Length: 306
Image (cartoon, rainbow, N blue to C red):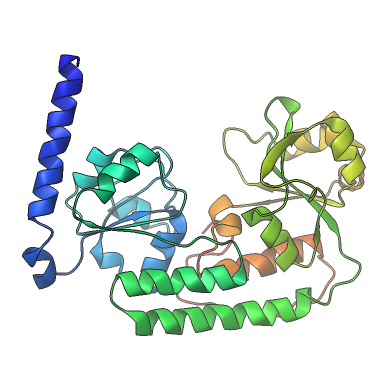
């Protein structure tokens, strides 16, 4: 083994030992020190009033805006370093289901610190399960039940309207258009679920997950509306997207129908999801009268992107 690898392993072993020694009696006597790995987890913790117990977050935790100003960043959700997470002295680590890499997750699970991975089914029911999971992890099921019921009530209000929409618009969610190549959302994704909740039809539901599709497949999908995440290094300007050969001759391209929304707001399935569904539905069906949703403490910093 090379010297630098030995040194790294020794340092990690020291961090693991220290974490193990401090995760017992001290934890029972004080508030949790939570590392929140995942934007939706962080939003739920804030909605539960537990932001004061968060000691660090991951890069996807961008809402509410204050989170990036008050908490250190331990890295990207899917490219975590066990050393970085443990270095802030957590007593509880809460992570979204796709936290990784697996090697880092395995080390965190060995650290004798409570490590919990939340269920992450992108659906109305799955959102309620995730809220309760986080609430139980911090020992406040009552608050979690209240939050879940409020979010579900808001969802019920908007779904009562979107569920009756006919005919349904065909929507293509484009994850990336880098180099003019379309990476689209198929079935069983957060994007597909949001399209359905908003009263529309996924234009390319014949495959699962996210997949690069050719120009012919895009034209055959004939989307009425294109949806993308706002900003980001792989996102060309709106006019560039609509001018791509794959999209220009679709109904959406000809009508210049492109909707952009903040990625966490649109796809995160956190406590703002009902409001995100309403905003997406309004963008797809601007002439349709949709019910207003009350502003909640967890949406007060702003809806689409905060």
